[in-house]
Image (tube, rainbow over all chains, first blue to last red; front, side, top):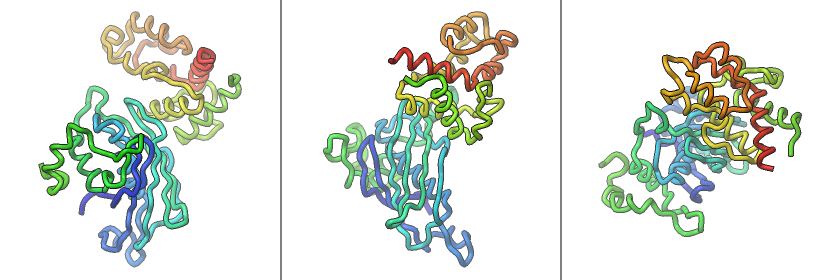
Length: 182
Length: 130
């Protein structure tokens, strides 16, 4: 199993917002333990999915420089538990961003219903004396590709979303291999 | 321009949300770390929320001068040097530095960060920007 808690982007507007889809399926191992005979997706994994979608929105805005990581969840409110067969839409808005951190606010929808509201605070782990690289720009751009961000995404001016120029050549040789294949 | 009471009420609301504390706990003299349980990441969260609520820009280090502590002219052997105190007075005219004057231990700086300090900072900031 891989640590992907979103399946695809259906919208991605650089520096503003994105919408990611998560399909909940009984094929996911953890649902058989949570709970036996009564499978429910843990809302902690909804938070993780929002952090992945919102984190890529933040990383794309910063041209994949630095290491923005989930630092704090100031708000997480859920109205019901997702079940196998549900399709969740994580609508993320980039509310604030600066060198040291960023705030993403998200509404989670399941059909017509709001399933939850999550705010995520990201901080740049590359700041400070103990800074170290956690993931490369290529890892993140490859993930964007996997999730279809470059198929549906647009730049702030409405033109198609593209990876940063300096990564495009390296990516074209990797896309068949997927993340981590370098 | 918001008056003192409006500023206090907004700051109170922000701290309740950022630190998950009750309104009654957020008194003017409450210290962010010792009394309200703020951790390092919360300081940046608070700065973001203040910027949004008051429509102002707060450059890094202006409200909470964290970078100053990494400068060896200003901190030696875990204590703030006289130059450091001078620099703090210059950079933080909105703060009551008496806890540090009594005990220059760098940890005492946390006791300077009170709710009232944030309110005074905002009062000065909005006065300049208007």
